[in-house]
Length: 298
Image (cartoon, rainbow, N blue to C red; front, top):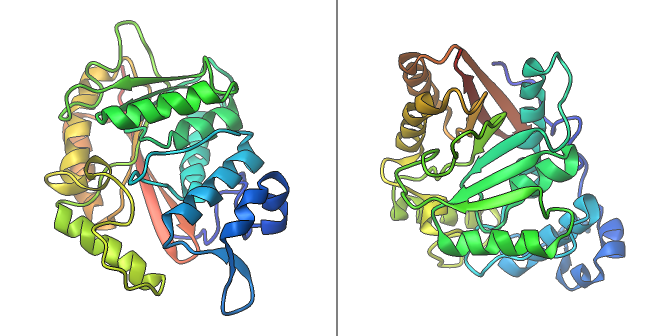
């Protein structure tokens, strides 16, 4: 797929720069974290975890009516614009199963594999499209945090369920229950292959931000950042397991951080018997990300 987009999805609420005066109206406490860039523009220090968390709280409150959101220290604090892009492009994918129209409402059921402590995908997906979600995670603390977010926000109650995955080597087993059918699954896999690789990635982020702090990582737990074999091994196992749930999930998807992994992913999908495969590229300025979606004829 050719790279044509240099901006976020047309329905993404974060297509323009952060409007700090507007954010301050709903979140005055953000003021303590606002700094001026060398160009005299308002921003926050993206190397400061507290500042990033406060920005996320403000964005969720302003755009998604989520008034109570928090995560435990040391857990991944995701960039919301990019997460929202994945949701909006998945909505486009779902039009192929719904006569060209974007399906909305609670009857659309989505599985988030690795929901994390932040619960971002269910928040955006439900608040934007009204979808129902099941979020799974292998980390008990992340599960507890996601449940707390749901309980603290009436908009999410009854719309999002969180389930603990007891086996880190499984994706759908013990999560998808007998008789359940999902319209879609999504996943943001750990893309590093080791703790050292994750730490190196964190140092690159800090360097890009003009910081030289000596830190182990840039936010995120082991299961959020790396797994044995990296993202390719993770996705390969997911593809294999998805074949057993073709009748219970209409469409599977996962983010893919490294484009060099795509040929091997396509071969794995062909071997698995996927009949529909689509790769969607997403752009945020110069940064390109992508996801692969697949389905089986059942």
